[in-house]
Length: 138
Image: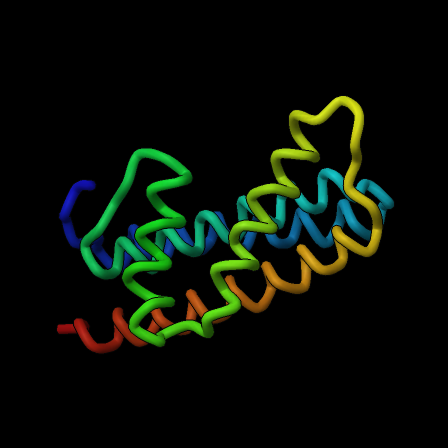
């Protein structure tokens, strides 16, 4: 873990990356590429979590560390609902299946759930970061 508060510009850039991945997830889903939709949905959430943690001055070098820290910093204290942990685990697993599993694939219903959860999580992280930026504006 590194502790270094990110600037508003950096936080906005990370959130823009999250939004880009979310848009890609929606396009891939609409095109019928369900594995790609789940993979992009996961990365949208990953970037959104990274931004929320960066707003608290925290950064990490692995996906597991980001997810663990988000659960510790946001879910456990009640800033995000308890079911967020299960959603993050499912998104991570679905991305693993989509990207690395040669036998199994992500089905339409799973991808739809991943994209919907990503949309909600990205929006919630954007809200948190926006409030952080407003609170620290000079």
